[in-house]
Image (cartoon, rainbow, N blue to C red; front, side, top):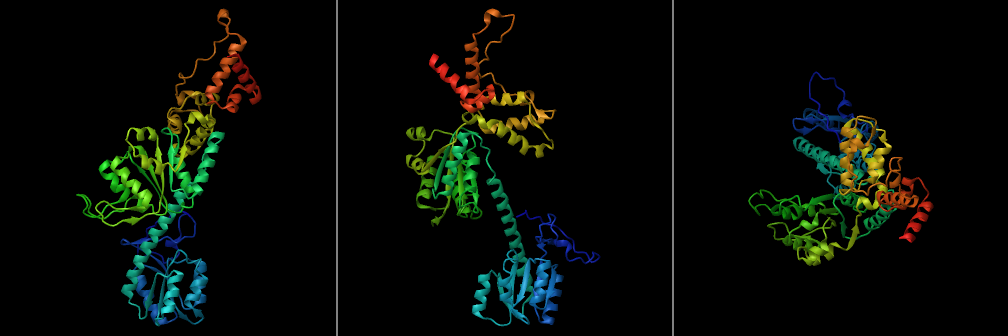
Length: 493
């Protein structure tokens, strides 16, 4: 679903009367987008009413209120209008010359899914009211209709509808972002994604992702939500380290009006806002002990109490906790509650550092280069061979986050079509020194062939993070040839 774009149209007596103009969305999607009139949304209304005088009266009143009105005296005419325009609001009479209004509504329910339907009738029948509401009608008005009340109802309904459409568009945009395919070519990371996919599709309520800073825990948390049955529900991330301690409880659990000095209104916390969805608690190891006890209660009982509140509120959320700290060691030091650790550790997942799946370095680098090009307004063909070798030899202590930042920086510095080592500017001095060069000027310094071969194999294995397939690629040999040499050198040591 495309994002909702609001357009503004001035009401001017000299403006040509073109009913379709304000409703043509800029993205060509066919969705009707309301314009604005003095702070209230202008609605495209389809009025289905067979009484000529009432129809004329309502049309005039609604037009004066700034709305665009199409009128139909029968269900056949209404159907023709629906084929041309999908209204934001349909005012529907029940007793019409060629059928019953609710039968028409039920038949066209799919087309009217994003429309507000208000039913009008001169006869109040409980069963018809119930049927209209079950079909999704917003309200049921008795004739004679109070036009002021009707206009106020339309204004409210259009405003609510606009917010709902924007929320739906934002949710679907978020789902697309959360569901983006992860870059994973290494066997190590593919295995991790299989495990993560299994837990995402399960009913496990608490997941603990632990690993070094920058290793991709937040991205995996989003992936878990997008692959779960909760993907259509809210996804809320809370950084336990970024929010001051005195505000974190309110951020998580909400507060009642007057519960503290600045509490001027009741506020729902992240757990309430994420009802049915997922809450990510980033840097869970930074949570203070008093809040740990309250979090434990919420996880075990699925109930919370707002700050200053007296009643408990039921919540249904999945919690994904992230940490780069050693929680078992913190438990031993009594800096982290043991019972909370066990409650969070229902399904622990270790996210490996980039150096342990270094085969993903170049695919990730190419992915970042491609995804960031729009931001910089430049097209790059890729990396030079020297640039790729530099990326492979570097140890990446800052993991995937550091890789992305370095690619972004290099795109600013690089003047050529390909990213080279000068723009990457990473230091590989932490790698072992290369084997001595064979030169005519230093015949006595020549290593033996076995020594040179062994040094090259060891360096390639370090650069590949222990991955034999990638190390073989760097050396230009087959994996079997590399394995033969590894066994040979192991036997010599």
